[in-house]
Image (cartoon, rainbow, N blue to C red; front, top):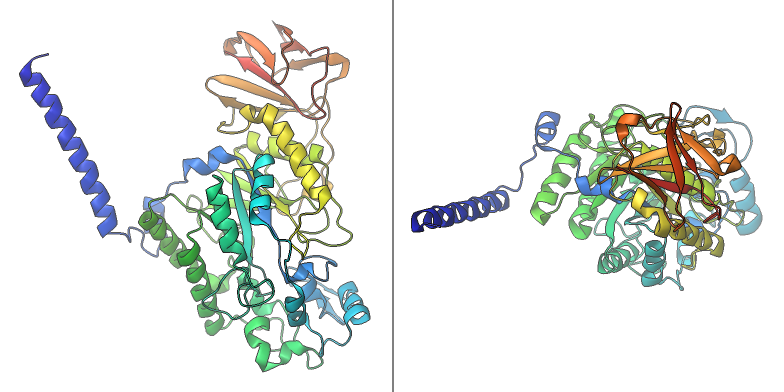
Length: 504
């Protein structure tokens, strides 16, 4: 190599390094790249690639509502419903007292003397061990964790600078979110937080024979009057904003997830303000952050400005932009209740596969007990999912969607809160992912007669070999005019969902 050429190469390297340095310096000096309007946000925002690669996370609903452990995490609301009451969407009414109201009256007495606030000193979390939780989530195969920072009840599960009603100053007397963040990052997981506080404004029923109307507790039960439909005040929205900023600034969540109410017209002006603030903070911290919302009431965040989330539901087909389903291990609750009914690991693995095949992620919720322990049945299910991922994770993590999401007769319910009508998958159902040029065909159940034909595989796909993850047995397969026919191993490996690797 000539000296002149060497000098030119060296000069090019110096210039490249210099440009990168100047770019970093520019970002550091001009941290507020995003302006609080959708035009600016659309111009600069790009979905973080890392989120789409992780595929599986853990949600945690834990708070003072775990003390009564009855009904659901909506106990704080329903315990005050003594007559006509509204549903979650504030649209329909039912007559008579709620079961939570009757339960509370029987077990804790008069609602004026013993209100929701009085559960907080009972919420001691004496057995809470963050390292054990995070270790369990890792064994389950989760790559990120999203604890609930504050639910509709208004009690913050962190050391808050904006409310006295928080887990550091009351109840457990610990910074629950902070401890989980620290331990999760120590063990290599990505850590987020969820906010449900916007609905606190109209969460509690206000009547004179309840403690919810006492001005001394307005900072927990909200300052709204007795009318459930009273518009959100500007003072409350400002309070919500300061509380959200406090959460962002002090915990630097990699994922910030929001529940409904933020997507109502009343919070419309705050949404671009939130997105710009959080995304600019991500630049300041030097990391790509993820903002999530349900777009439940309206198209709250324009497509391509946040990652869309579906509660207890799925999509019917591939969505080219990343998305997420959040659901619970519990069929009947997100928080721990004494009559908790768990789904099976089989059905949850099938959910994960179906969602990933359509370019989505699964955020799976656990509901710890008030003492800080995760119930044994939930732990068992998490470990079963982890065992499946130990064998089949190659077909899940870091994969892309294929040209079709799957085959088979079983359809899934789509949209929010549609999972209740889903039927179990059969041996004819399969889902596809791809990675490194290879295709993964995941069979939801073991096929009849130990044989499967994959009709989506064409001769032009040039399959060179077929193996099954977790099995050393050599498989017999052939291309036919009906597709790719595979003879399954003689020995069945595992109890649910089986992955064929189609090597090209």
